[in-house]
Image 1 (cartoon, helix red, strand yellow):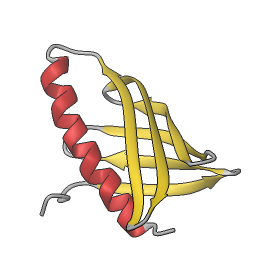
Image 2: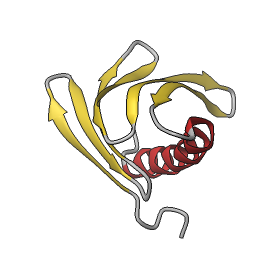
Image 3: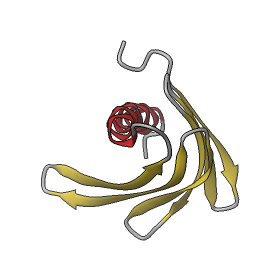
Image 4: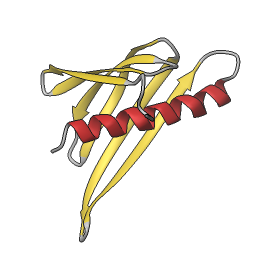
Length: 104
């Protein structure tokens, strides 16, 4: 399965949630807070990221909804371009799993 070895958990934090994401390559915690059109997620701690911010926007369309995801992430290390791509792919999978498991 594409998500084998990936886990996502969420705990309430006021009007926000604290997320914990673990993949084959990284573990990070972030704080996800609602915005007018979706939510914004900021880094709390990570074994790889020096910074991370993601913004999700959801807009209704005639056929359903348009979801846009903007991510700014920086990692430290020897091969950041390769790792950023691989981690980005892992994060897409983890985010997809989380969204599917938390409808609405």
